[in-house]
Length: 133
Image 1 (cartoon, helix red, strand yellow):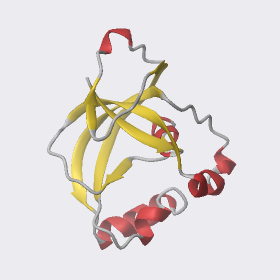
Image 2: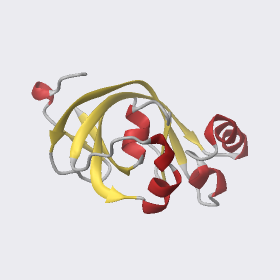
Image 3: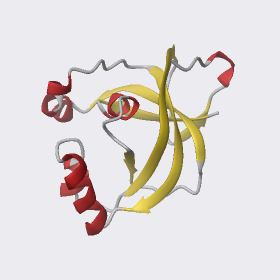
Image 4: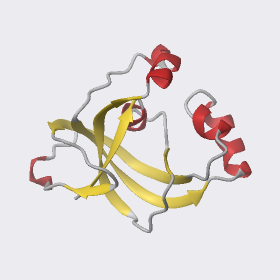
């Protein structure tokens, strides 16, 4: 199964239902299920800004599963939508001048953590040991 590694707090925000888009500088044609891996990297500024959520932020493990249903170029219209949804969660993208793509995520669920190393872009993991919580 495909896996995407994300820094914290972004991985936990997705699996806990606070974030429905993941942002990348690259476009993907992939649509379908994939696993969410919380990498070892941390966005310290975002962690501070979002500490009021009091979430767990595991690192170095697969923590969720989602379906990628669309890949959108982030434009002003999407930025306005994100601002209305949650200004604090989407702050970096709302204020970004860089070209970004939004991966639309649906059917998100948590899984029992599976400790493994992450990789760049999408990568493959054998799904025999995945247990949805």
